[in-house]
Every structure is written in structure tokens, then in C-alpha cells.
Amino acid sequence: MPEVRVVNLTKKFGNIVALDNVNLVIHDKEYFSLLGPSGCGKTTLLRLIAGLIEPDSGEIYIGGKRVDNVPPEDREIGFVFQTFALFPHMTVWENVNYGPRVKNFDLKAAGTIGHEVLELVKLHERLNAYPNELSGGMMQRIAVARALAAGAKTLLLDEPLGQLDAKVRNEIRYEMRRMAKDLNLTAIHVTHDQAEAMSISDRIAVMKKGKIVQVGTPQELYMKPNSLFVAYFIGESNFLEGSVVEAKDSELVIELRGGDKVKVFGEGLKKGERAVVVVRPEVFMVEQKKQGENVLKGTVEKISFEGTFVRYEIKLRSEDSVVVIRPSLTEKWFEVGAGITLSFEPEKAHVFPYPETSLAEELSV
Ligand SMILES: Nc1ncnc2c1ncn2[C@@H]1O[C@H](COP(=O)(O)OP(=O)(O)O)[C@@H](O)[C@H]1O
Ligand SMILES: [Mg+2]
Image (cartoon, rainbow, N blue to C red; front, side, top):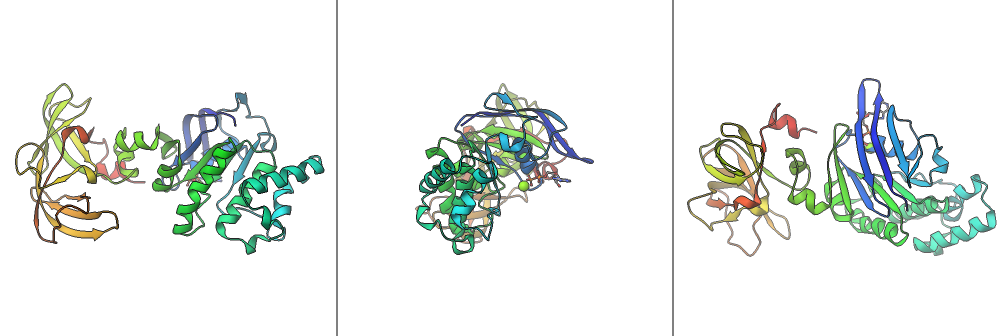
């Protein structure tokens, strides 16, 4: 149930800075995700909160209490691993009651808790089954039940759906959220899968190379990415390089590499500076405007039908860059090789200064 707060947290492994001065508050009863590419420090942060490893510097608070010197078993957290880590030779019942038994809880009370949590995760009728007789989704729920029986009020989930196949994963991710919400838990869910994080989280922290880049609701991250990296990592984006040729307050005109000019709104950019314009695929309109502001002409290079929408790759005529668009299925169809005219509204694009290194380097994971 508690709030989890980390202050100036740093963890190094030899020369590797796994976590670089991280500050974060996870609210009471929040379903929170740590999202980022492999190696960005997600597991390290989770293990620090759990007390499985010690920080080099910084502070950790759970429920307002500093826990840096509190052993893991007294932090009232439950850790659910990707592999579930169930004991294969123990039944569901024995797995769930393992925590209370090793902690010397009153066994009668522990038994009652065991029944309660198994009811909660809807697996009461399987209490005599062994883990290998259960589906991945069921093992997942047992792992959660076991954490709860051991007194967890905060659930730490490290890629908890990673072992499951795609279809099951999509079903179960909502289940994880439902369980945490029904039980009034604070949950911290680690994943590298942005679709998973977006669909189940109250808020998400996007991480890159040991740092937190942005924290926000899924909508905020998608609609208002604070950086090229977040625009790249959350959803799909098109990146158009250019330079500022006019700047009047936040209204900018960017000349793209191929010479097309586009109007966008953005802060902190001056005339003459290099910039990157970000346009989401669904923001492009097709054949709505033939000329004027923010019109780009191109040729259809590739089409993929993805169920609820069509994804086109369009090679822009004025430069060699390829943009992705996703018009609705009800719109006119285009064949490969067809000419196409795209346009977008300035308010719906984002613009960032060109990175100090390079765009490729900035987006590399
Ligand atoms: N026990 C360890 N010893 C050495 N390096 C480690 C150890 N644990 C993690 N690292 C390194 O720290 C960085 C962050 O790792 P990790 O937190 O596991 O990332 P993630 O969970 O986001 O994939 C990586 O570069 C990883 O190789
Ligand atoms: Mg990890």
C-alpha cells in the first residue's frame, strides 16, 4: 500500500554506472512501470528497492520510512521474477505458504491467509497441483499469491510476463493490474515492452542508460514526449531533420533536408539551429491538401496490412527519408509506386534541437 520514494540513487558495478542519481516517487496504490531498453538499469532499481543489493549512494523510503538498513524480508515487498521462481517439488499450497512458514508466522493464521490469497488470485481449486501442471498465467498468479501470503504490500514485478507467449501475455497483463488494484497494492512493473507498459500503467518512468528520462501517464508520454528518445521509444515516430529558417516566439519554420518547409511549434530553438521534427504516423493526413504549408510529396514504397489499420512507408520526393503513415482503413487505398501527398497540422508535431552527438546516437539503445 505504501508510497515508494528513491532519492539520488546511484549504483555502479565496477566501471558500469547501472543507476545514475535517480529520483522517483511512486504513489501509494499506484500501478507503476519502469520502461526502457535492455541494460538501462530497470532490474537494478527494483533490486535496490527490494534490498537485494545495496546502493553506492542515495536513499530509499517505503511508506515514509527509510529502509536502507532494513533487511529485504522486513520491507513488506514481494518480488515476482520473470521465471516465477516457484518450487517445482511443492504444490500450489506449499508454495504459497512457504513464506509464512520460514518466517515463523503463526501457522494457523498463515493457513487462513493462504486460503484468502488463493481465493483472491482465483486459484483455490488448484491448491494440490504442482507448478508443471499449471499454465504460465496460473504460475504467474501463484507467484503473486506467494508474495501476498508472505505479507507483501508492494509488488515488484521484473518482466513478469516475459516467459509467456504473446497472446497469453496480452491477456494476463490486465490480470496483473486487476490483482494489484483489487488488493490495494503498490506495484512496480519492469518491462522493455512499451505496449505492455502503456496498456496497464497508471504512470511510467522511461529509462535510458541508468537515468530516468521522463515520468508520466501513458497519454502524457505519447502526446508530449520530452525528448527524441521518448518519442522514439513510446509508439512509432517519424523524424525529419532540418534547420530553423524562421523563429517567431514558439512558431518555427523548419527547412527540411530536401528543401520542403514546415511550420511547427516549439520552445528553445533559434534561427539557424538544426532541429528534428517528430510526426506520429497517424498525424499525417493523406491527399487532404495539395500544396501550401506542411505538405510533403512522396511515393508509396511498402504497404503492410496490420488488421485495424494499414501501415504505409512513403519515400519523400524531396529527400531520401522514408516516413510511416497509418491512415484509417476507410480511406482510399494506394498501391506501391503510387504518388501520394501528405500533410500535417503544426500543433500535432513536435520539434527538438538536433542532438549534440547525432540523431542515430541519441536514439540508440
Ligand atoms: N551483478 C552485476 N554485475 C555487473 N554488472 C551488472 C550487474 N547487474 C547489472 N549489471 C549491469 O548494469 C547495467 C544495468 O543492468 P540491469 O539493471 O539488469 O538492466 P535492465 O534490467 O534494464 O536490463 C547493465 O549494463 C548490466 O550489465
Ligand atoms: Mg532486467
